[in-house]
Image 1 (cartoon, rainbow, N blue to C red):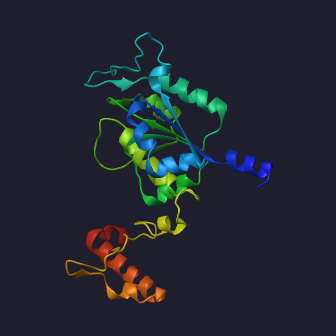
Image 2 (spheres, helix red, strand yellow):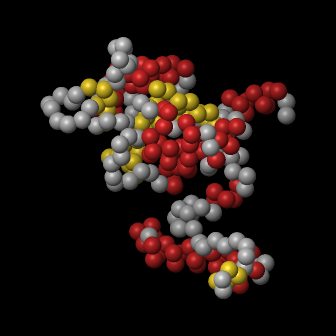
Image 3 (tube, rainbow, N blue to C red):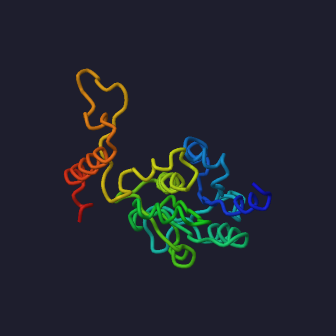
Length: 237
């Protein structure tokens, strides 16, 4: 590969900037498994940013009580605006995403869409949440991983990051692996088997031994449809 071609590839890799009050809770997961492989290959660049580094007082406070009263603390505007403002001076971003239980529910189609972006920011909330002005004036998209509340946005952030990174070309050793995952074609994944063919009398279906790829494909399609109909009929709508 010519030097100029290599330089272009490096410049076009995906970048994910993660803004959080607790970066230490993310380091181990971002340095393991598929995400580690993607980072080691130089396919994705993931940078962690600690909101406490942008606090103005000596105690590094990033939260305060909500106007109008009520329990809990809110992340203030200033550290978030300063952190993301600094990042936006360095590069342009396709999306600035806030992980929130009242966002649009994350799904495979959304993961596919985000995997095609070049630069994204993921903001993890914490405490009671974040000042509404952050959502009104910085955030371009809000994502939820389900109808429940967690202590912070770090776990949802990891789920989104993992789902997106594994779809980027070159990350998985077998490119077809991701294409056969659940939800990629609107159906759940069919049953999968490995050696031995007979385990305690439980045998692998004969169709998988015949070598007839058309029959195997048809069997998998049928199994995927039946599994989806029984477990997630809502997907068939």
